[in-house]
Image (tube, rainbow, N blue to C red; front, side, top):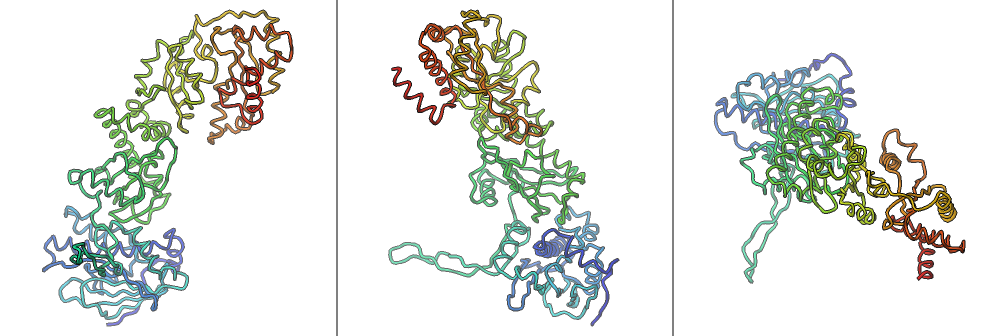
Length: 629
């Protein structure tokens, strides 16, 4: 038997197209060919379970071998194999997919979807790295003859009698000069581990040395000996393909360590399993992310029937869920996936919505069943929840019930609980409720103390995302504004009818005090204002306007359209309490130098409390303080 012919394709330049455009990375050839080998093996198992094959299936390991001298890579399976006619049909006619026909033929079988298929061009990815591809195959069918197929990357092929003596198929790649990187053992191991770590059929790549018990020595201590064993690169039964009832917490944690060997244990996880209106399995883990908005992309891995596709999952998973780790497996997503496909595919959009809902439901369940435990995890979960609320309206609706805020007393409240807590106390004379918050409790301690003296509560918003979350809350909670506790003196932050103090200074005295401080400060970025406060309030307070500070923070965090504010210098308001005894003392002082020294000391104290006194100014302040003592 010998036959030559031309591959049935519509254009002569199909191979250059395959080499350049079918796949974005030529290492994919190994994934495709190993997947096809697994496909052939799965078909054999299915036929056996349906009683279509007599006898035992036997060893089904797929083997990948490397011959550096001959410059070949061989992918060998013990699956159903092919007859000469099937080689002509499935290899020569690119438009057909053997797996697709097989699924149609046995569609009544319960688990026919186990078959990795629907990639008719997969085999031809071999020509991205090989200038000659050879197939040796022997069908499982009784009386079948071995067949050999060979092609050099042109549209010509040759079929002849093969030399395979056992059921299955060998794909032999003669690697071209441009692809010799794949003739390295470590490179092949890397690719196989990346794409085939969880394939459902054992994949062997050479051997490895391991140790096993070998009795005891003279002291009764265990001895070990080195043995050479098959190097099986995959776990054929990963946690995500099992049902939750089969798994314990330690199983989920063990699988997490398998995925991320050096990561800290996750907080909790969600096991996904849906078969309508699309097929999806997977496990998503909530990592410990602390208070840092550290979106570590490429942590969720996308699989199709246990074959790794990509960790670029932006279009499958909502952006805020990129904080999660884990695995998603969906046979509804093809292997040779592209960004444009993901963006347009209706199943992908459904998966996106489904995962968002499942995550929200899990968080809600955790909150309701163990609120104390939920609060303990909030430092890790909080950034994730807030990010989700900012970027996904549907998630935000659900998250309103379990999103927490924390105050300076380390007490936690839901948004509804907090609104109820402060609505009667922290409302101003215009009926607006004011939430006070701190971004740095240590540096803003004096302002927090002033608020507490009034009986007010102060929230803690100290994560990078909180500058955006503050604005989000204001947009969602009616008749409520949020003000950082150090953005003004407390009586100005929440203006009450009974807050109005009468200024003890005349207009002339006020002007004189203002002039003294302006002359002492001598900086255009500090605006002096004489205000009537209680006598026991601070004599001088330095604050930055809430609106201006927010705009500058948003500009620093890359807020669109806020660049103008980012270029502006920091401007501060210097509030001088005209009713404080120190101000009266400054006015009464006859020596101009002493007036300025006292004013400077009061101003520097205000700067010191804000952490704004540094360098030579701090040194001068210390010296002046010593002299005043």
